[in-house]
Each structure stands twice: as C-alpha cells, then as structure tokens.
Image 1 (cartoon, helix red, strand yellow):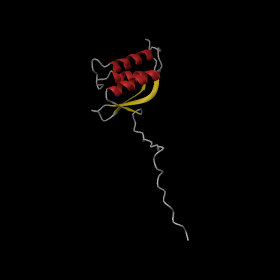
Image 2 (cartoon, helix red, strand yellow):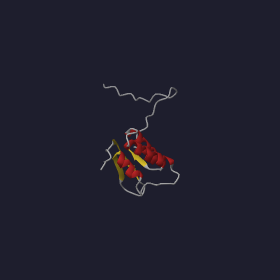
Image 3 (tube, helix red, strand yellow):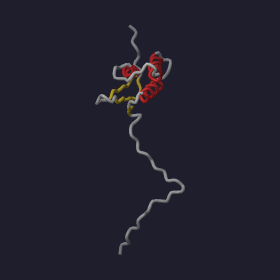
Image 4 (tube, helix red, strand yellow):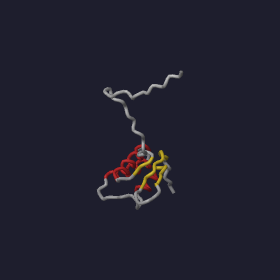
Length: 113
C-alpha cells in the first residue's frame, strides 16, 4: 500500500460559529480533512474552496509547497467567514504621529526644595 507522506505546515486553527472549539491542522492532510468536513460551509460555486482543495492535493503530489497549500486554505476560510488563528489574531494598532500633530503634553515634575 502506498501511504501519503505527511507534509507539515505551520499550525492553523479554524473557528466554526456553531462550535465552541477550534479545529486545528498541522499537516496538509489535516487541512483537507477540515475542508471536506461537514462543518465547512460549502457552496456549489465556491471557487476559493475548490482552489484550496486542489492546491492541497497538488501539495500531497509534491507539485507545490506547503506554504501555498496553507495560504489557499486560509483564503478559503476567510471567504467562508471563518476565523483563522493565528493569522486573524487580534493585533494592537500602532498610532503613528503625523507631521501636523502636536507632541504629547509633558507635565513638569515639581522641584525638590
């Protein structure tokens, strides 16, 4: 029997709205399992889902690398309205002072006598 080689990826977790837990994958076959699960919101004309599944299949056939399979999976999840961790994790927004903004107010320290 010819076994499929496990192709490792950077871990990804998908949050399905109706479930409390995230589904995680660390291999390309894991990505395919999530894509083909009953929980995935499939639509007949979902080309991003089809592309993700095809890219994962090509990756298992050693025709493309694992990062492309993971990227296609993440894009399909986003198109389906699913939360992707760590890719969609909250990140603080940096505020950059513009050239016209005033510097922050600095309070004087009282003089010691």
